[in-house]
Length: 171
Image 1 (spheres, rainbow, N blue to C red):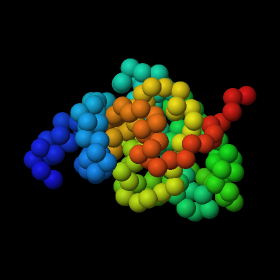
Image 2: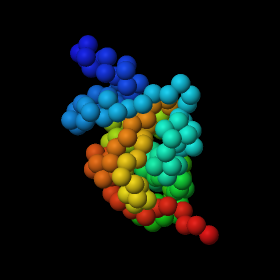
Image 3: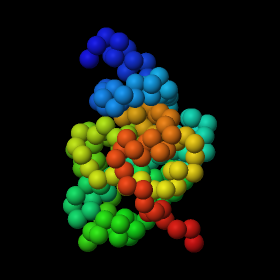
Image 4: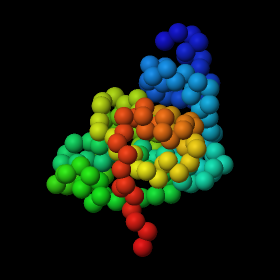
């Protein structure tokens, strides 16, 4: 990493692996828009409060296990993932939340800081359409203290995600 790249990463607060992934995608400008907060942004509510945006403008990066295979689901911060809808979408027998060890092994990041792309391994990615309701969403930048803004369509494209409807339906 060059001195400038190291400085950019330190100033942005983004995780170095995520910063490198951004550079590889030609998204260096995202580093300049990333925001690091003194208080944690681990949950969607914490991130929305820190940024000063609507809860639904936060993009949660959630790892599930579908028949034992990790899959990333991108969901707006106000929504909950309907595991049965994920199971149907994937044609899987069983889907459940992955534990912290699987999340770290799959993505290279801890829960609360998982970005939507730039992971250690390639996984299938599903993005809920609810993310498209906004011009900009905020996602984790690899740490539980740093988030970055991105247009939802750009996020979906860079994550290599399939747009789906996996949000839990309101009763």
